[in-house]
Length: 197
Image (tube, rainbow, N blue to C red; front, side):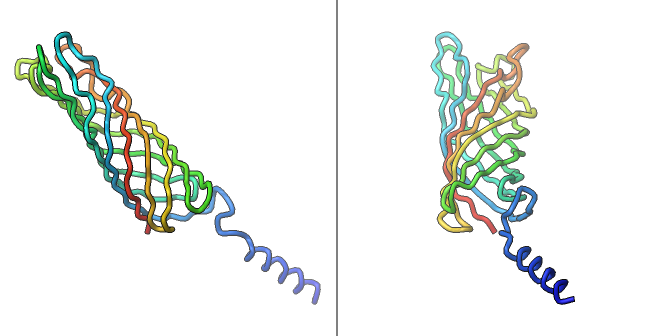
């Protein structure tokens, strides 16, 4: 009987000594909020005799749930700024909307975390002015837009971090045929703060 108690005690001690972050399936379920600002750049084609300003200030706000130390689910809102056209054709092109992404993380050390992300986003692209090529000089499109990105986060504390990222939103807008907005990839370089609860 003493041997049975000894085995039970040793088993309990080993179980209690196992780290809390032992594996991929250990759930943390920690919510977080964040906001970032940066610069966007759109891969647009500029019509003849027209100059294009394809970069602008962009920003995003988001909230997420850290499922475990490797995976988070994130939703938010992004404004990818405005492209300006001047010359033979004038106008603006704006893209903004809701983001739905999966975020992968890999901890280098307590201060530095690597980030990879991807997902589907519901973005609205609006083109206004003579560049739109429609009778009203305005056209728009709301569609699912895929995205991917890489980044890193510097953790000041367990609750506050500085996140720096590059993201690409693929083929925002729709075909330029028959008065559409035209498609363009939009890159976003951003930095911002993340608060984990």
